[in-house]
Length: 170
Image 1 (cartoon, rainbow, N blue to C red):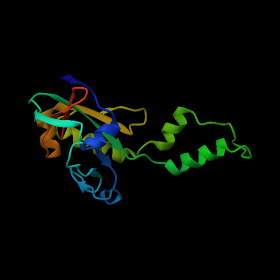
Image 2: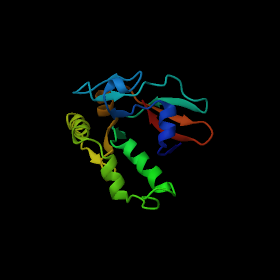
Image 3: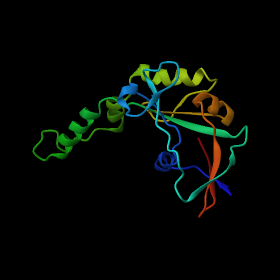
Image 4: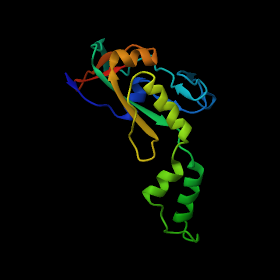
């Protein structure tokens, strides 16, 4: 079997936990976890694997798991409005596209949301690393036993029957 990364769409299909910093009321069916229960939530678990996947065994202790945390972006309505303005021929802003830096500034999460994720990770002995220029994605790597304790879950290795790819799944 081959160990391989899995895309975000597949992770959601497989029901892997994804942490999102937002008011827990903003995520239907989500439950709050972590030190500040009003700002950190876990997506609901998908109970059954898709047909092409099978469970092999518990993920071996010491295996490293990379977690990606999505931090709520700000300014999305303003970004949408800017997109319409620069795309509408009758607009004075037509053709004046935003730079990547302008988009990052506009959509950057609130500092306290970034700090909530970083604090949560540090409280479990992990090192948060921004994965994007505006810190709307934060990654951390930890042994599976730390991740299991942190997320109150258990990991198992699963295999795709057709291609032999093996990944850990909560």
